[in-house]
Image (cartoon, rainbow, N blue to C red; front, top):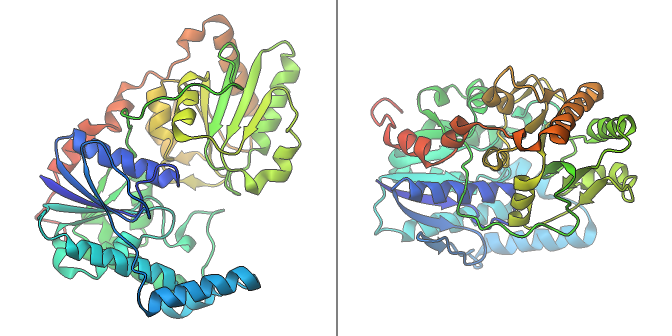
Length: 412
């Protein structure tokens, strides 16, 4: 089978979404499919053994000029007018120009003749998906991958907020759900969540979890990491809704209870939303806060810490599958889940999984840390996740089966 992948970005340093895009593309190749990638990464990028073509931004025409005028105006006046533009037109001038650039890039590709066209995006943009809506002749081959809820007012609390352009965005996603041949989601809970808003999703959807990318070369461990200590790592963006306050409190209680413990908590990733809180721990000897590390260095840490942490929002449900989840699975270390009872991560690990707590239950979190520390102190080699089923679930084995068993007759 020949698959044309249209990805907004394959630059693994620009976002977690790009990392999972690359892992998916890599595993499609490993699964034996013939792959070609069109991408809008704004720079030339090569993936080993895969033909990758950069779609260039159209820098001629009214839309490009308008997008730059708006950008310059906002930069110098600090008046953000894009929201008002989107209220009228649905999307910004930049988004529309980018979408049209991708449409042109797809139209130029007329030799590959794919059996399946897969669109991958990042953040809340979905530019490749919007481009495919303008190409009705290709929609009978189109699989739209939806990585997060959309539009934003359809996020679960506390993430949800209503954009001025909410009606346009909702119409857009409804069209994607109706015009695509297939839809794919990284999470079963996300599929069910989106299906409750867009019923057309029901009969055309598959689950393709974020993939494990074993081809990434591991880097050396950073100097600040001590392999001889009990270590807990949260790697990833600490969004406003992912509050580390209770995790920090629980860790400090643990240190009080075990003053001789050689233990460290590592928080690696963007934390602008919690800058004031984390600044209090800048000089704490057992808490390390780093804003950014290269992807392969983070992977090295994930593979060498005592346990990895997945911190989610205080909520009733978390339908997201974090991009780092497959990395944590293949690292084969215990995963500390701090999130709601109804969580995709908890669903995958099982209801009886011992290292789960609500994100705001500091007593339960402290108990988890203590239990892990006691195991590390007596038998550190037994600190293993040991879930081959999840490794298989997030590699080319499950992916190959999912793609090959698509039901081309009943969808649409």
